[in-house]
Image (cartoon, rainbow, N blue to C red):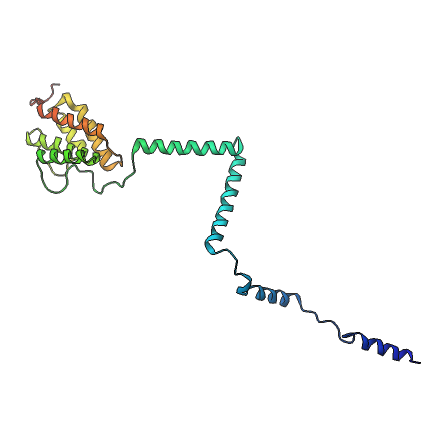
Length: 226
C-alpha cells in the first residue's frame, strides 16, 4: 500500500508543469511585442492608401463643420442651405457686375504707353479689337484716339504721362458742353485699365459716339465766360 507521501509524488507526476510556476510577461514588454507584431506588412495589406485616409479625414471634418453650422443656424440644415445659396447668388451678382478680376496694370495710370501713334491709328486698332470682341482693349484704344485727336487739333498740348482724368479736365475748358461725357469716358478708361472691370459692346459704342461727336464739335477757343 502506497504511503501518503508517495501519493502526493504520484499526483505531481500526473500533472505536467505542476512543479514549474506559470510564465508571465510584464505589461510594457508585452505591449511592445504586440505593437511590433502588428506592424508587420502582412497585417496591413488591405489598409486604405494615404489619399483614401486623407479623404476620409476631410469628409469627417466637413461633416463636423456642417453639423455645427446647421446646429447654430436658424432652421437647421435647411437654413444653412438657404444661406449658402444666397452667398453663391451674391458672388455671382458681383462677378456679373464687376467682371472678372484682373491684376491692375503697373504704372501711375498714364493714358499712352511707349511710342506715338496718330488718332487714326488708335481708331483703327480700336475697331479691330471691337471686331474680335475684345471690348476692353477697344475701349482703351478709343479713349486714346479721343485724346490724340484733341492734341492733333491743338485743343490739348501733347504731354507725356498725361492721365485720362487730366486729359478730360483739360479738354473740358475748350469743349464745356461735353465736359460730363469726357469725365465719364476717362472714368471708364480707368475702370477697365486699372480697376479690373471688363468692358462690353455698349461701353465701346458710347465711347465711339463721343469720339465722332468731338471730332465734329466746335471748340470754345476763348474759354468759358466767368
